[in-house]
Amino acid sequence: MAEEFILTRDIIQDHSERMLNIKKYYPYFKLTENAFTQFAGGRFEELDMGYILMAVLRFFIEENNFRENDVTYEEYKAFMHGIYRRDFAIALDSDEEAEVTSYIFDKIKNDGKPFAYTYFDPADKKRKTVRMKLIDSRIKEDVICYYITSDAIEFYLDTKEIKDESSISVAQVLLGKMIAASNFRGGIEVIKRINSEVSRLKARKNEVLNILSYDVFEGAKAYEDFVNTGMRWFEDEQKLFAKNMELVKEAVKRIESYEGDDLGKKDTAREIFYLEAELKKAVNKHSELLAACTDLQIKADEIIEGAKYSKLRRSFNFKDALRTMMDDGDSTALQYMITPILSLNTKKQFSLCLIDELLMAKPAAEEKGEKIKEDKETVEYIYEDEVEERRISHNYVEIIRVLLEKLSRCQIGEGFDLKSFNFDLAGIFDGIYSNGDYYSMLVHMCQKKRYDIDEVAVDTDTFFEADLKEASKGMSDLAFELSFDNEEKVVIKDIFEISNIYFKRV
Image 1 (cartoon, rainbow, N blue to C red):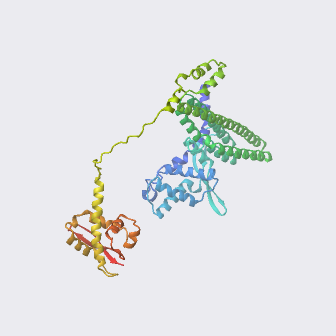
Image 2 (image 1 turned 90 degrees about the vertical axis):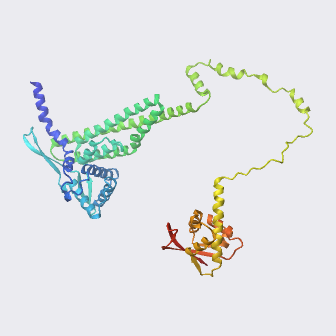
Image 3 (image 1 turned 90 degrees about the horizontal axis):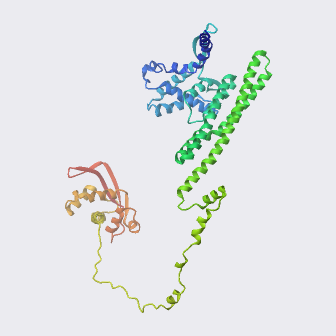
């Protein structure tokens, strides 16, 4: 009978609290249900409202709480612009993007109304309505600004164990919002969560130290991970602790100056003082964690340094041996270090009697040199790439000489085109159109639009100018320019065509 009474009581008394805990999840499923199916004829069904909602909440947490900035609609719009292109890889024109961005924002705000659902409370025997908002607004300097609510932060916090940021910092942001909203009972639960996280980090610190004691490599990895996910946020966490302590002190002042119902005042005051005591306990635990992590850092550095030294040393470590003897209070082991030094083999020293022999020794009357046979032949090796380079340079020089001779017969301001030059080359060189060196020479020549053989004789910048210098020996006062006609093509052997080039003497 007693068990049945307890069961019934738990079902009835706990139902209302369970419904209040469910409320923070209700908007998510309300928003993701057929979010884009009926909007704009289903053109945006590839978008995922669940992912977008979590991204927007994270964006508001970053701006409102970490940077302490209010968010305008334009800033939200700029954030959504990156979401469409980076995460969904869809290209929207400006009108489509403005339309879908406005639609999503109105859905998350629920058109300014709270999300609400009704449930039956068996304790009071009546139906009740639960309401919550994700994003709320306020007017600041004649501009509408938006901010995330504490319910939305709590929902985001419950959906993921935060690794990238400090979960203690995020929990303290939620605590600050709850204190500002006079939700002191909920703040107590958040502080308990903070204390649990601090205890977890202290336990993790001991685990890291244990790993370092038997495996330095794995321990170093665990230590680095612990530093990146725990220790790096201490300064920000301490600032948030101080900020929340100030909020609690203000709440204490308000309750002391409150002139209202005595029973309500007592309940609220009890919750505030309990909250203050729990927060002080959290601050003390956090300070202990900081001291423990500092100790971990010192010990980890000593262990890692000792491991490096033991890996690198090549001989007996006298310092370690001396430290061991001092710890044991026994110096008998010194004989094993001193005896090898005292028993050196002195018989292998240099004999002084040999000095006289060194002084009396006579050098040879003359040094005999090595005879070198004059009939030795010097072999010069020529590699294949050198043969190719000599051939290419020779062909370039011969073709350039024809070009310069043809230019020298022109008056200043006159010239000819590639067709005329090809005709002259064909009459001089057999198979010129099948010679690849000719076309490569044209490519090198077209790197510049003007050449002066007097300037080239002083300084050369390209391979073509080096061959031009060789071909122009004995010439002077000759310069020419190149111009290109991309529309007129020169057909070669009915196989391929190149753009026509005009050579003009200047």
